[in-house]
Length: 258
Image 1 (tube, one colour):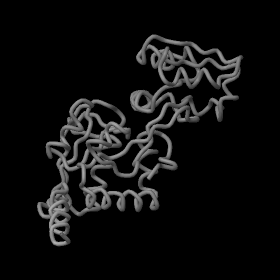
Image 2 (cartoon, helix red, strand yellow):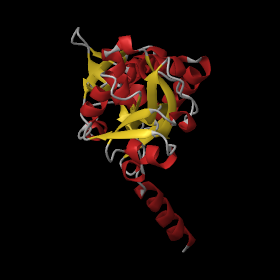
Image 3 (cartoon, rainbow, N blue to C red):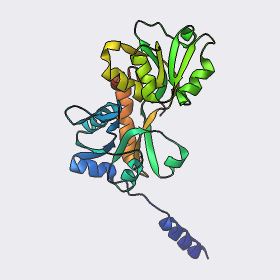
Image 4 (cartoon, helix red, strand yellow):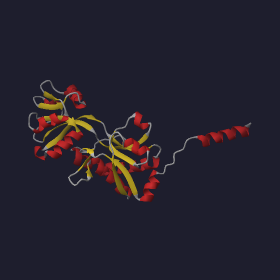
């Protein structure tokens, strides 16, 4: 009886699913890491005038490859197919403004956060705006019904003149043309606008809502995930992540969830 119990227990153990954690070993053996990135979502990822990808996510991908001591192959993806690229092993990592939620955690794993993704208030450096209270008496442009509209509505002083536009293009156009003094929008929209209009001297003022980005890793690839976490922690401590965020988003990365 005891022997049969032990045999059954051993068989049950062998029947448990196992994950072959080969991604990190494969990367180090090939001296190459394949990373999925966006090319249609400035300032996180877009195609520059030289027709090469650039942006915060691309710089982060190159940072990780550099710390690993391997070359990087950048693979453009869309929001719709980026997770599938991990699942089919077309990419070792996905660095593409990926938010973490319970549904995604069922099919892929996530590293610590590497950058902020946020809705915020922006204005020219000459316009004093340190908090919502400073919006009193100022004209503020926002896209009707967007997350930033909902968040702004909660905190805007009664004397703030909030002008709502039908889409992001109209909202940005109102700010660029001087119809409004202050812009409430997402980091990607603001980053693109600032890159196109450096003469406006626009800067980040304060955050409305934070939704950090995480790096996607194949399910069960703990060795690779933990190695990337080490790299991110060191880059945060050295100021490299803050520098990248400031370069592309106009603000440091700040406190990021692990």
